[in-house]
Image 1 (cartoon, rainbow, N blue to C red):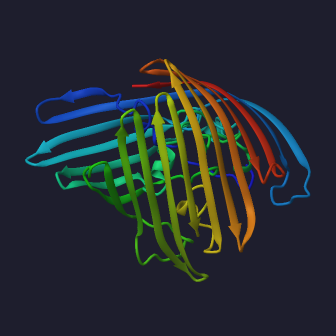
Image 2 (spheres, rainbow, N blue to C red):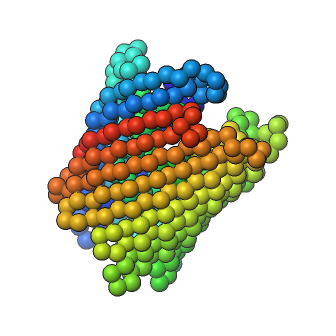
Image 3 (cartoon, one colour):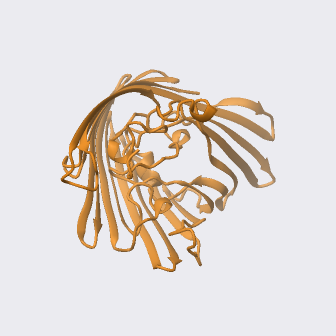
Length: 383
């Protein structure tokens, strides 16, 4: 895997996407309930990549590679368990979820007697306390910054981009979807988050979260703070959602202090079978793929990205067009431009089964660093 490659943990937002309401009841009485939900997806993919042999040297040789794989898509496969009870005026809840990959890189398969090395990853383990005053979440869950950007992605149940620049062609985990080409990933974090009740369509969330470190010996005098304001409403036949989210933190070591800040937002409008989705973000001192969780930058590093999408649904069919772009500047000089164009067809067989056909065209630095074409055919099963 090249030096830009990231061992990316399985994407773990499935329970909040389409079919999120699907669940199987394990236990239910007047005071307690336990349910479980599950997602399995698998894709046949064929990718064709033309890229520099050395991503850091624009004068290096070009190499081409075609690769066929059977792999998971943007979302991993997971099983989750949900707990609910009510004591006096308090609603107590909890969720634990466990995520697995289906595929392994050729280099890892069976290596050192470790079998297929399909990792089991816990991305959520939290409790909630809720009443008329709102909800408090305690534990591990996804961050608030970029949360709605990724949840409103029309390709959330699809495959997404898999360029060699981030080591994704042979990656043993998920593809990136539009991470790095339109938004950053809201990594799960230890947190204490308060959400207001619904305020005529508005909801405010504020979280105190475990900070990320600039280096192994860095110090963080304050936690990371993340927040999000969302508005959802229906106007006759029009569905509308708008949101704005942000993050701030500081990390200091012997080489200095990095103050990291980010702002994101977006709008999604649906009417009839048509949906239009636009989101964007701007950050300083943050990574362009995983935000604070891969701090290697300084305050002079700035990232900006946006995602534009349109979809049309009729009967059992949904068609999606998508364009995402992220640019990274350091000292006022553009050091990276990463874009992904995609078209996808989703066919709903029933409430538990969706078939997917998708094409992604990824270009790094306007195609001078890499051009990648990925075709994917797959199925998504939910319970």
